[in-house]
Length: 227
Image (cartoon, rainbow, N blue to C red; front, side, top):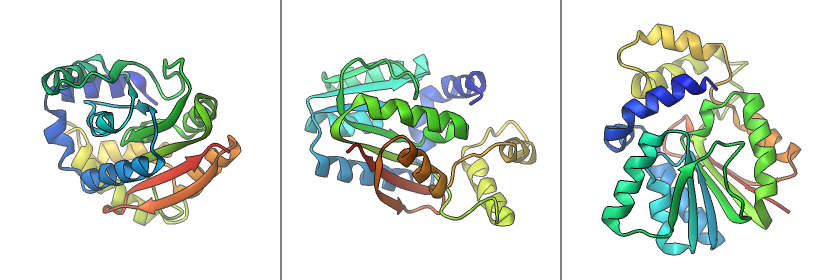
């Protein structure tokens, strides 16, 4: 991940992020599905990685004892803290943390993340997943909602490029040429396909319980359980 570029972008987006992200096809539907799956798990302690302005954490907070919400953008975290204060939500702890260094010393029942994991390169995704299994209690789960390919994008480059263009048009930097941003994404696996994600989880010792495509053709949910 180009951490500096990602951090700069989300620091800039923070004040209006909720309005911005609500326009993403499949975003709300994916969050709804994460919450449904989390409720079925009945977790007590949750770790929300890439929490942004805290949307998923706030949805889970009334149903659990504690949420550890982590992000790399202090400006996004500040917006989240302000929202928590206004809503009188007291069981969400916001703090700095990355996918591979979540800054959480307590074992958790559930790890969630929505629309953030795709910023990592594939080797970084693999290493982060290895960290997660040690953070979970036995039987604990990961519920990951994100951009993911539901086909082998390396064998269907034209289909991939079409969908990448759609992502850029919605989420890209409006101040930069679309073609330039597409070329950058073509240099790396962004996002991973479901076959690679499943392999990464299984390599780390997880059992992949569920993979679902949500409303958008590039948004999905994967559920993995620690035996």
